Image (cartoon, rainbow, N blue to C red; front, side, top):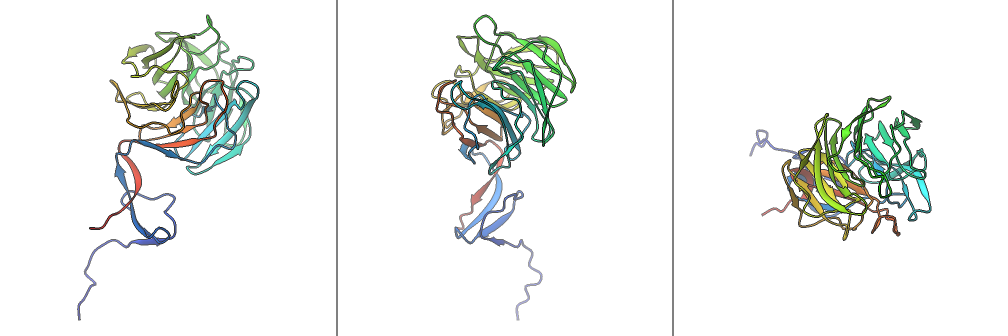
Length: 329
């Protein structure tokens, strides 16, 4: 009789639906689709549909340090300038859940995570207000030195950076301010006064991407080292109202302008346009995550122009882990 006790291998899990939180290298058989699947690293570089927001809106902001499976979006415009909301929603990688609202403002800067978020600035009216979120409720923080809107925001709840913003012509600014969890301190200015930029990075290693000087739309990129800004290589396509994700040396810029689908990757030196972009073209959207796993939510076909969208898209980038069907030959 043959003895199999010495054979080494891996048991294959048999399930009716794919695991919600697989680990790298895991293999399973899906009885619903009758397929063998695994979870491994692959260069995909594409967006795929996620769960829709409960409230369709543009000019919303994300907690910039959020992730693709733990994201927070706040505020926005639900009708093209006529209906402003403070609606707050959390994303778990599948669906959005409505939470306690912040103040009804839009065009704000955002920082932090799903359980420790910060929003600052905004409009209706143009505001200097700062609010912090503890995962359950919002509370006021220290005001910005000057009221602003369409400002960039990066960092954490206790180490945030606000830069640029303002409206209309003549009041666009490059002001840069640091937050320590209690108060804001002025710390220089952008090389070019800008609003409606994409953002990436942290308080001491930030990236400002594109934007407008009202009315000019620009492709400029600048990095911040905690003290000063440096102009870097420009985007391939100038646009404003775009979103960003990632860090200062590995970022993603998506949406904004027309057609609003363009996606570019940053390697710390230059931008590369991805062959495919967002499925739903839009500007004035929210973004967070990393260059390997980013999230895009909300927006509209053109700034302040209905219809606002509830669409969410999930980006799988270079070196990201994905679920794949295994072909046996």
